[in-house]
Image (cartoon, rainbow, N blue to C red; front, top):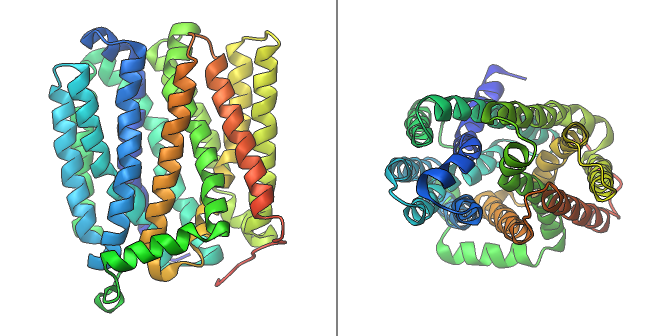
Amino acid sequence: MTTSFFKTALVLGLLSAIGPFAIDMYLPALPSIGQSLGASMSAVQASLMAFFISLGIGQIIYGPVSDMVGRKAPLYFGMVLFAVGSVGCALAPDIHTLVILRFIQGLGASAGMVIPRAVVRDLHTGHDAARIMSLLMLVFSVSPILAPLAGSLLIETIGWRSVFWAVTVAAVLGLILIATSLPETRPTEERLGSSFGSALGGYWLLLRDKHFLGLVFIGAFGISSFFAYLANSSFVMIDHYGLTPRQYSIAFAANAASFIGMSQLTGRLTGRFGLAPVVKVAVSCYAAIMLVLLAVNLLGVDRLDVMLGLLFVGFGFLGLVIPTTAVLALDEHGPIAGTASALMGTLQFVTGAVIMAVTGLFVDGSARPMLAGIAFSAAVAFVLSWVTLRHIKGIRKAAA
């Protein structure tokens, strides 16, 4: 792989990580935000849910726009909006204002979620796309390792508002990267046929593509299981198991490291066995482990070490699912890669927000509702993978 290959993955990964960075730094602060603003657990979780919903809504707009005007201009707009929302969050006087500003912040962050995937499809397909997507995931996944640790240090030393000043700085760095290190990958001649009308036509085409939707929702329920973990893990580990914010950050980072490590095997495994077989095996193992974890908890084994161990193994398999399903879903939709990436992101984040909301209805202070949400999502992803990919023996090194 050339230096430019790695440079592209690095830049796209950093831009993609800015939104998740605003989530992962924020997680250790959730209990202290509730205490500071006099808000309930559900109200604080609403600020997280608002961010996820706006991430989904924003992507469905940015994708077609990036097909029409190019990839860079929407990225500039998104980073500026994200920075404005971040400053507002840092100054929010109450939980209701914070929820609204988190929604605005998410609208900006969604540009960094959808457009890098379209850039990958502009440049590569098949096995090469899987390789660069796995490298992008490596950079992207630095966020869930470092962000909670950085967030917990800031919270303990300065307070939770400092988290939002830190992500404002990240947005400024993102603007610098776009200006200096990211070329325009959507040439003018390729934009000529793109319009809002063609975007609607593209969405209609994609919504009738059962294979595309199947792949999108495999990834959606895989991601949703992690979202259920994101929304509840800080309360479960800090309030239920008694961890400090820093200890929680270390536990969270360990699971992220598992996800990262396994995602880096994507290129090697898909090159040898094919994309579809890797998806089916990885989803099967992930679902089995999460169902075992739920069963163990239902049988009365409420131990932190058991939960963390099984989550560590399970999230490793999830690291093989997310990049491969994204590559498979976008592979046949190059001319409308931005639109396809947008619809994929929107459906996945809206699905995640729904799973988070439903899981939140059953919160009782224990780990059980969180584990049930994770296991349910993993089981649905398993069923979808075998229905969607049952006729595919393998997609190996396509267009490599």
